[in-house]
Amino acid sequence: MGNLNESVVKNQKKVVIYARVSLVSQKDDLKNQISFLRQFVNARGIILDEVISDIGSGLNFKRKNWNQLIKRVMKNEIKQIYIAHKDRFVRFGFDWLKNLCLENGTEIVVVNNEELSPEKELVQDLTSIIHVFSCRIYGLRKYKNKIKGDRSLC
Image (cartoon, rainbow, N blue to C red; front, side, top):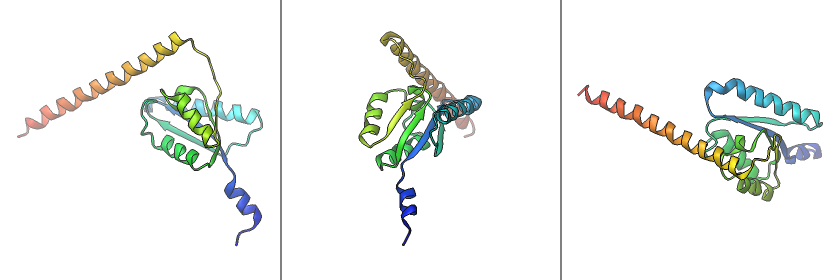
């Protein structure tokens, strides 16, 4: 049977940083984002338990580490999540996810909480959508060309 200190440590909720970039070529940006968030947390005397990061689109809800983080939130294991910007966590539905986290005892702290006008926010959202779909079209073109190449082998 474990002692009291072990059970206190096991039941302690975690403070985490979540950082994300869209592309592998942005790894330096990811490192800078993590460094900035670490400095922010440390400057406030907050003890950081974990750094979680992903490389993938903010529109992609299948990011491995992000999904694991959400599962941990739902298990009431996370106290606070520090993020640089709302769109680093998720591109759409941030307010819904923030509320979900609050319902499970987790606070999301947006460090660079710049308030955009509704027009600027809409422009950013539309730009994101256009970018995602243009990438999909490009990906389909590559796939289509690969199929053509495979048929020539027959």
